[in-house]
Image 1 (cartoon, rainbow, N blue to C red):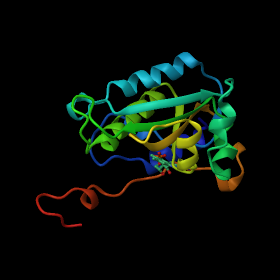
Image 2 (image 1 turned 60 degrees about the vertical axis):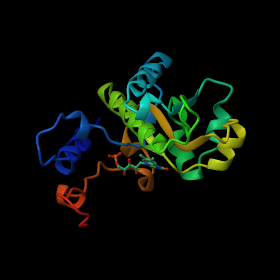
Image 3 (image 1 turned 30 degrees about the vertical axis):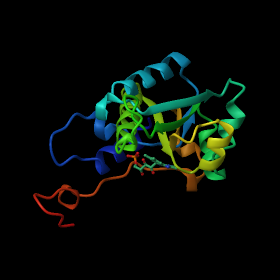
Image 4 (image 1 turned 45 degrees about the vertical axis):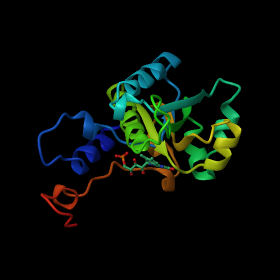
Length: 197
Ligand SMILES: Cc1cc2nc3c(=O)[nH]c(=O)nc-3n(C[C@H](O)[C@H](O)[C@H](O)COP(=O)(O)O)c2cc1C
């Protein structure tokens, strides 16, 4: 990370209460490189695996391709043009799906997306801890993903992730460069009692 970006992180990302620094250090740059291994990638999935879920249903599923695999083109071609430009420089592309029913009784799950979101964040935090990038994406063709990756109807296509080592953000075209951003104030998202936003 360049000192300039480090400065911007601390400037924009000041928590209002004392929390572990990993939460504010995780962010979503677009400058990706390939200085990592498939073993590193497996460690990210391992972190995801330990997320909590309703009935321990573990609805999350991760389909992936590294840039060295035959499937790479299929994953790459799912993304819109903008995302392809930066994400194809990374080490791996991941498609996240969630099972919409419970394993134990086949009934509909209400929290499959919620639980899978927790797993994704585990993965992203472990990536940050290793100074790797895990950048979430919704800019891809959900229908095509289901078709080409043969995802059954019982599973919801949730999102994609671009994963890689950190590159130099200033090497990207200006409209692609991303700066560490801030967050809504606590009062805007938390209330005691009834809905009052
Ligand atoms: C589910 C999801 C979808 C996203 N889709 C895209 C995307 O298609 N393209 C992109 O450049 N960034 C995408 N992002 C990145 C968000 O813009 C980013 O996470 C948000 O601005 C917060 O910034 P931070 O992750 O740096 O804290 C996505 C993030 C998430 C979690």
